[in-house]
Image (cartoon, rainbow, N blue to C red; front, side):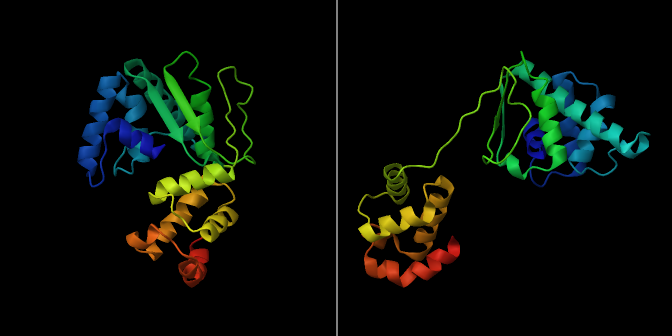
Length: 214
């Protein structure tokens, strides 16, 4: 959610507190949001000193509710200006607070120009599967042919030793992320010239190091 705030208000790495405050104020004015109801919470999330949130008497539960409402408003108001696409990767690693915020926003977007994209592992259990505006796409593991096509694309060549092909298929098990990591390890271990024709001797020489990367 912090990344979404930074992108929305154009907050850059190295911006000081004064600059962040000014950018958030300009953004709130553009969106037509009340500073009193939103500014302290956004400044607090962006780690700005003297956000003013400590001057507002409220319980921890009320603070959480107001932060979620402020985030929801920025999404809905922003969608009135342009189509919004909110992408959240690896939802299975999200903490409960982040998950609650995403759920709160998700329940408020029917009719709004907002597309929310989540990626998560099959074991992750969510509560919005019954929503009429929800659609789930299951990504299965790649086949051997698809895995090798990805390898060839990443290496920029189809001239790969057969033994190495079998090794890649065995180690990566059709998972695109593992394939990317494996190929990245190869690039670190082997020169660009050697990548055009990887031989079994090279594989045997570097196999232990490659295993460490995986």
